[in-house]
Image (cartoon, rainbow, N blue to C red; front, top):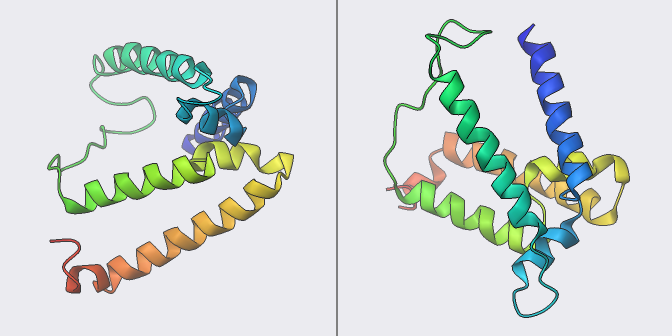
Length: 146
């Protein structure tokens, strides 16, 4: 049941991205271009998402457990550290250069746009390299994660 609900949640999310135009990297890049062809539509999409999440969290936290699990799965750490800042910076730089983040990139895949066909393999390669580097403690040995 969790797999089915996860699939439908992802499908709704992807459809929302496509309908809102956020699967088009030009929308994101135009939002970031304050001195040029600025497009505020991303701000409206973000405001709608934050409003929905705010209301949703208020309703969900009233429950003792999620509908499809025995307990809530919350992060054990809330510390802001170097890996968090480095990861956020890399994400932001990549988002600003390519106009994609992972969700919209997957949603744009059926459109077969050349940018998507370059971004997704590069993203997957980066995820794989990052996982290998962390498991081999390569970054920790270089002092990046301390």
